[in-house]
Image (cartoon, rainbow, N blue to C red):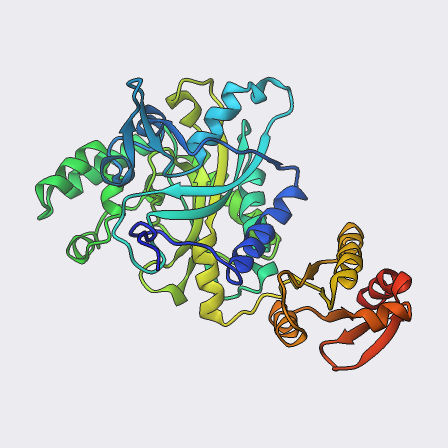
Length: 420
């Protein structure tokens, strides 16, 4: 047993379970690649101010959950707690918005870090796949992203998830709602920290998960009653486009995402089989974020889907993913000459695109065949001195148990034919 263990609130991805995570990432990314989104990768840490300005000084992410540190050179950095601010920073730095083709459509996959109380579905290190469409204000773009996420989940076999949808208004109508909500919150029996939060960003209080706070929010004013005509029309078009695409959703007038940069469209994917950590992903429009971090006005929209929680949702529904076999052919040499020849066969199979493995180490036939069984290979190729003297190898079908002699110089083409 090693002296060291994974840090609290983190996990290791190891085979065979890691194959599920890879399949989930691929399924989420596939519809994005087919819709004009290009891959982007950003550093695992950024300037603290990027998240303080973009995510919000008053959010729990910035005040309580962010891993921040100072470098030997005196720079204040933070492990990235979310992806949008980093992706937008990278796009601005590379002047992608000046290339003349807006929106800039990007997707990403990576690890993120928040100092939270660890529990099932909530980790301090977690994985997300995200998508951002930067530089266009268009209800069709909001609808596109929601539809693509729905498509990704359904391609995995998920069925028992719900899409919650709301509008958070814009700089014209939200200040009026903000004032009304603050007046309401000041009349409640809230602790000092919550009242302070209400003065900085009252929408954060609506997102408070504590039961004693939620009980008092029953009569809170709803943002939908304060939306300006522009925001109402925009939201209705998003709803119409999603409906026309056959994607079901639920209007949730109390939905507030946990980040300050959201405007207008906001949405969340939830799965009721996950208990209290029911959100598997979410996102929305963030028209002012570029200006918050020093860029030009670039209305944008995006989402992030949790790979960890998506895997948990699949398990909750009992969905078994059809994963490709990690090994299709396993070679078992008996003797040095067979070892040399079968190693060449394995190399040739791999070059031909066949997943092949080899019995390494000085194992006897019994031990090597055990390894072949454990590998999950469909076929095993066995060769000894007598076989090679006759110019053949033994090909065993691991499903039927049938074993046949095949000419050594034809084994690669025979296996490709059988696996086709």
